[in-house]
Length: 183
Length: 184
Image (cartoon, each protein chain N blue to C red):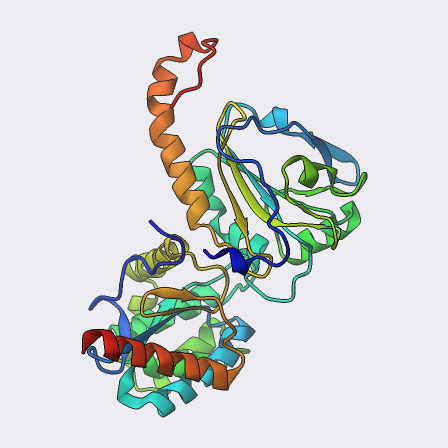
């Protein structure tokens, strides 16, 4: 991918090996979710610019179709944008989404900023993907040009390599407090 | 694997229209109930007319079944028609009647294109064709399909606009010319 594909200066998104910053956001008007609640399984974080993009098979709709594939890896998926909870609720109902959309609404874009995925000028988050391992460490991240839906192949490849790494990790789980990071 | 590469590449298993040795192969991942695919259908037809033997067109199924309740059965109907050598006849029929894709509609289309109705009804329920549609979908995910329709030109995902007919056809011509130059 060429640098010139990006509109504006490229954001610096967090990369592999970085512990994923903790956050707590609303998933519905009266429910909140903290990232740490998902410790113990891989997590896919999908930052996207806005609900209601005017195409069918947009990014979240695509992931909604691929949920069975993500579940094979035991992975949880969270969509995150700056849209408010009621907007997310209407969007999720309209598109029949079966995974949570988190509202990075107040302070606006605070979580996107933590991950380096906020677009200052426009006040929206970038199209950025993060795959976290069961310990909450970012193992793969990808920043897509804002106009290009990145698809799901990168996510699946990342989950696949996580899977091959976690087999020996499970066997050594009694050394779980060892400070060094597994390769 | 790099991003946006057609995986697996086009093989004899695919439904293809146009010569195998055509300099440009256009692959579409599509959904018979998706209105954008319905628009793209007409543009692909035009591209086929304009490019003639320079173009081979391949269609793979990518039914967004959560959004489109009839898409999967429609895809399966096209596969069942393929079993009788009439994939493209059914493909056209489905895209020309996107607003009527219920079970009785599919049977009516099968009849009108002259399929053996007993075999069609049997194939429509055959898990082998369900799997075929599912396999297409998975290959799309692996290839970086990001919605419908998604096009691949000579194996590379095309991220440009297809709705601009002239630009799309020009891009195909350019791909044909590049392929002809590299093989010369």
